[in-house]
Amino acid sequence: MGRRPNDSETSRCAFLILLLMGLISCSFVYMCLSVAFRPKTFNSISDLSSKNEIDGKNLGFEENGECCRGVENLELWGSAVKWGSEFKFNTSQECCNACKAMCSGGDGPCLCDSWVFCGNKQKCGPKFGECWLKKQKDSLAPDRQDAGDSVIWTSGLTFGKGRGIVGLHTDYGLLRIKLLPESAPYSVNYLLELLGMRHCAGCQFYRAESRGDNWDLDGNHIKDAPLGPPFALIQGTLEAEGSTFKNIPTEACLDIRRGSVAWVGSGPEFFISLANHNEWKKAYSVFGSVLPEDMEIAEKIAQLPTKKDVWSNINVSVLEQPVPLWLGRITKHDN
Image (cartoon, rainbow, N blue to C red; front, side, top):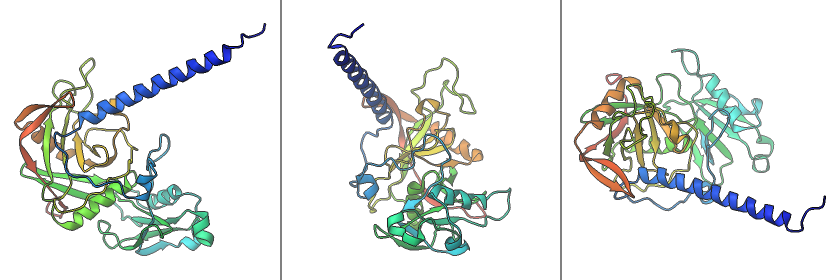
């Protein structure tokens, strides 16, 4: 039986309509997630400047597979524990994983905490595939050899157990945060730069919402309870006054769990989640995790006096008195 001449056109129109409806639905969900974290007034954010941001790449997003990556156009220095001329891989992820493999096993020493890989066949030439595994004198202040568009290397960090922990100091206690450079290398790179400035004037928490009756003590969502408000989080900014902030590329790799520390959009607004937000999936770039024993400090801040406000038709709770914070190293006394 022959088809009518307009059957293909009708099918094509129906497909385009369904595709358009899908795009509109996705845009609506993204808009809702964005406005839920939108502060009433933004701190100044500089224009996108890095090549990766201009190209619009979603750096770090990996729907399947392990998160292990680094920063492009960056060469870290340091003592070599594996010579790249004799140690080669096809991808930077394999190089990253090789370094991580030397950082496992209980409380033992981490033999590798940084790696350097050359992955551009045209620019690397005979160096293509070289994977240099290194050990830094100070993993929170890695030795940089060079950076910029002319640099052919990609470099990354990895922190073993008890390493890569920084502190958010507040009047209500210390929030120790384990940084996650493998899943959010650009974010951690910014945090290490901020750490080196030794001040964070203007950094603060300004929004606080408890778990309410929606999530239990472990952060698990209670069946049939609403997903907010309250949204079970404390939110603030990590932009120091007097410094120039550059938007951080999206590094959506991990789900939001209780204790997750993530950017709102491209930063410098950030939040600490008090619950497991499975409904958000990988909508935000997670760059750290609060140590479980310090979550009581976050819960304490979430219980401070607040006032109601509305951000883009979303009901939020804003702290009556913002909580100043500063980023610092963790000393033995703090551990």
